[in-house]
Image 1 (cartoon, rainbow, N blue to C red):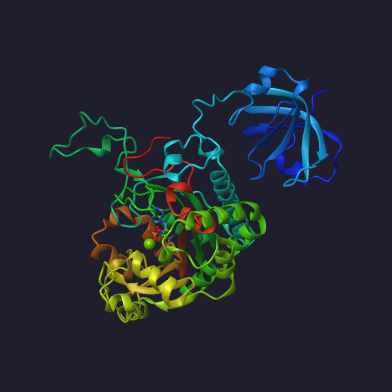
Image 2 (image 1 turned 45 degrees about the vertical axis):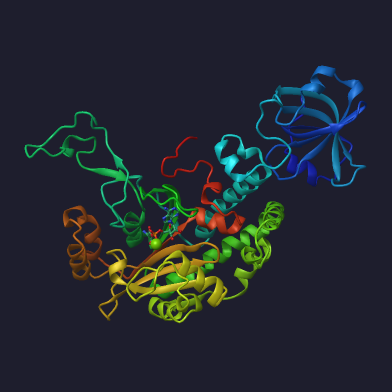
Length: 481
Ligand code: 4AD
Ligand code: MG
């Protein structure tokens, strides 16, 4: 009789033994002797493998030979209490079906560990390793927790467009979307490319942020959030930047900058707690992996806390809240500044670099830091202007090992101030008429922020390169898989 398939996660937790079960999955290892083989089987439902015990005399010799690391099988058998150590139950095999072999001569994943760099080159197979299984299960759990967090708090999930005609951040680092013929584009009388003949009748790009559209939603639905892919054509080859990344952007009517900070802190703590409550097996594996990795590092690069302790630590304390001006003072008076150890000098008016952010978080406060009220000249046009005429109500949340994890602000809700700023910054008003109208009709104070999803996953998993926390990384000169 066909046995219904069980997930290995459920079998391992089962106390109901001596019953027939079916498991399907990929072979991690096979060991044993002439009489009996022990197969460690994994189906991705958990980091843990189930042990399949095969009495070799009962099976075809060829079948057993073909059960090698990487092959895929279906096993019917009896779930029994395990005699060995390391697992509470195992499957005593009765029938085995081999779906696909994996020739040991060519299958690239062998029992010995592989470097993350090597695994990036075989990203189509890296899901089958313990590390990437753990990372992508946690990534899923975090996505689910984000929707749960907002759903439980009267936020609506708003789908903002992927193709846009506006440049939300004014950064100008966008991917063009066009169906025009590259070789022979239509030209205007002035000899310029005639975008009115393009698919949308105008220049369009992939979105860098859903914020502006989210603001339209918030000025009617009160609380909304977006959660989608965003695209930036910046040529930053760093362990923290992707050309395609996912961003969560809540936008709230009637929120000032303090409400915004409260939400950002509460949300981050909720997500980290969710991981601790729901992903412990995977976190423990990643923690042990990190401890192993750290053994080879010089003393001064070793981290002070293990992964789980670090996550718990963030939950314990309030985040520090300081202004940009205070941050600059702290940095100027810091040891590395005085010894000329910062690569980029700190002066009021310049943007904080990753080294400065990490000094504030890791050395000075030793906890996450929220920095507000940045100089208006280094921030986007939509941020609420302060009375001093020099700063805006911006918010950056800085995390240990990461630097900026969240960027946001209170928004300028006064029509004239916003229109003036748009003109000062040379943004064509005709592209922004719909955005400006929200300030003409029933304008309200409102705020929001953007959480970089992959930066959150970096923090929670303890991985150090952003290419290892997204299934298919897009970076300059790289879109293979
Ligand atoms: O600070 P950013 O550019 O802010 C915005 O896009 C606003 N529109 C958000 C808002 O207020 N609704 O980006 C927000 C976050 C950053 O803090 C960072 O975590 C992440 O997005 N991020 C990136 N992550 C990976 N690769 C990149 N190239 C990133 N650029 C930004
Ligand atoms: Mg930012």
